[in-house]
Amino acid sequence: MKNTIIRKIEKSNKKQVLLTGILSLPLRVGERAWIRQTNQCITTSTVEKIWEVSEDCIVFETCNTIYQLQYERFPIGMAAEVMCA
Image 1 (cartoon, rainbow, N blue to C red):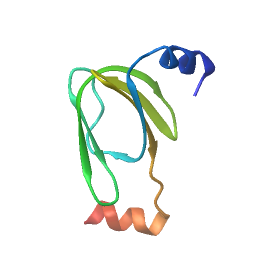
Image 2: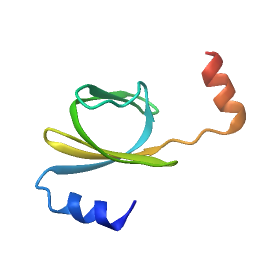
Image 3: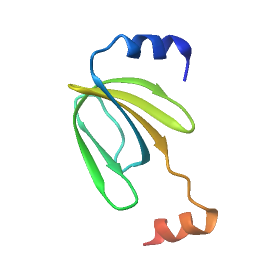
């Protein structure tokens, strides 16, 4: 993450949540985020702003919360099984 983004987020009074998982659907402003973790699926309130998208994480903001989603990594063989299931 870039330092300028961190400073802007730190000024917010919103709750900040760090998660590890993957997005079940593409992330879009005006729609809910669907985050799949190992044992559960989380649905957020409507996405208001996408702060950063990188190779290993995404930072976005909803009405009450700022989420930093670190992508879950799967071994190559396991990824193929998940995609075929």
